[in-house]
Image (cartoon, rainbow, N blue to C red; front, side):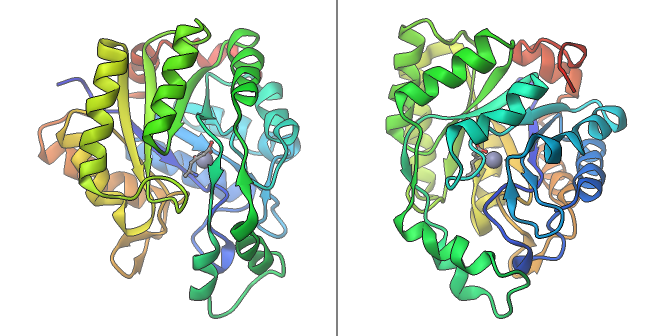
Length: 308
Ligand code: KMH
Ligand code: ZN
């Protein structure tokens, strides 16, 4: 079997500081936890920024640039910038930092959808910041907009113009067909790195049957031209990504996707989750890819050709 790529999504824009004191928020915290995740075995770091004062998701280039050069200096992981940002941000806002940094890799969400976080608000006893409750509750009337025009724009401005390659985020079967459409338009080139996303309310649920079906349809649509990775939200993270590893796929962990290390126990760091999945996949007989092996597998341009 091919070597396995471990992606770590360090902080994201879903969880809020009241949910875990271990969620990295400042540039120093994101840097430290990113380097820790890389040392634990993550070849790729999927990155969002936050306002260091409030922990609120931020798309500001200065918040990204406060940690990106430090990460580049402190580890050799592939720095993969989110273009999803947060569903409350405009596409211009979401693209500002990736356009400035011209990273090797960027996320690309393959469809518009609901992205409902509001059930999480009920589980918070005490709020640390004023913005958190309305932010979560407002997602009962929020569309995460990723139209074909948006997708084409990201492909042009980051892919064609800046040489980035993509983590294609597919939350549903329909997103695979949209990806095929862009392949047919020759706007994307293989190998396609497809991230199957499970457990976001608005996307497919974390049922094992969904994973086998996604693989079956992706095989049909892309043949040898793709590799898949899995992320799953919350407590479904480790079971579903382990299943992906057993099927020959790749894995994504990190506090963006789940705050826990075991049922009811908060992860103390991103590295803790990376170390756990590394143990699991190595026990299965898979070998973990280094960052440079990831670059070769994904056809990346190299860290020296970014603006970080
Ligand atoms: N937050 C994940 C469910 C992105 O950053 O582009 C999906 C994600 C989106 O990582
Ligand atoms: Zn993300």
